Amino acid sequence: MATTQLQTTELGETGLEITRIGLGAWAIGGGGWEFGWGPQADGESIAAIERALELGINWIDTAAAYGFGHSEQVVGRVLADLGDARPYVFTKASLVEGEGRKVVHSLKRDSIRREVHASLDRLGIDAIDLYQIHWPIPDEDVEEGWRAFAELSDEGVVRHIGASNFSVEQLRRAQQIAPVETLQPQYSLVVRDAEQELLPYAEQHGIGVIVYSPMSSGLLSGKMTRQRIEAMPDDDWRKHDDRFREPQLSEHLALVERLRAVAEVHRATVGAVAIAWTLRNPAVDAAIVGFRRPDQVDPVIDAASLELTDQDMAIIEGADR
Image (tube, rainbow, N blue to C red; front, top):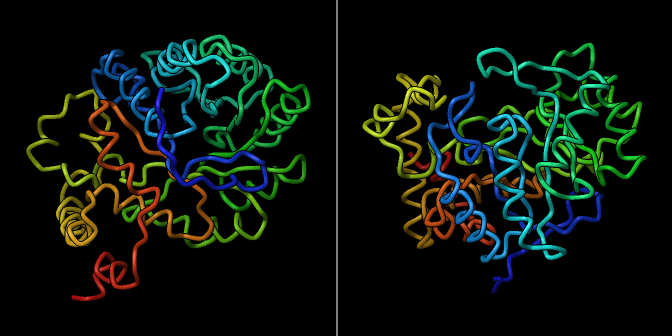
């Protein structure tokens, strides 16, 4: 399989050299569960993963919760054909299947240990390169969950451990038990809370950062329209999210037009500019980008090397108006 040379960076202090864009496998978990993206053909998912790897992406971020194991199974089918040439595999625990295919949160040690072995089986690998607590819920069990993760690291079942969706206070509590090697917050032009405390804290403490939803779940892809949102299947969670509804929707579509103006200058796509904006933050090592079809990969791959100027940033932020 031919590969393209993409820019890489070290993920915090893990020693993992990762491409600045990684493949996010949330949507390929399919529909029919609480946070599904509607129907998804496995063949298209596999083709998307293969295209991303062909273009040089060297890590995949998934989770046991995505389709309650289905995403990991699909990723595992691709990994089975790659042998030692496989990409890094990052996955998560703490969300388990409840009644009606709804998410149940658990940070109990026994639950996490069951999850990790189920993930290893589905992925068909001997060790997970980065294992992350998906959500720090319930808060009172964060210490128990992190101790379980530290155990798995000591046993070599997972190579590195990280946290997703943690607050600074929760990071501090976890670090009293074992180092938090990586952090995965949501970060985009639409969701910027992480800029206040979280990203500066991670940078100060040498915690590697991979951000998720840099295109705000497709909202900043340049292809989202009111008509497309209305046509989404009812089991696509985005159809019911406030960001995709008025009055927020009009603001976000206006932002997309500012991104489009910058994209035209760089001969790039709107989505690539949105992703590049997140990578400009000095605390951010890489961004997770979800691909559902192979044709979605090529238009945003340039984000890994797209250098935005101060003028670009002023346009994006609306400071030129």
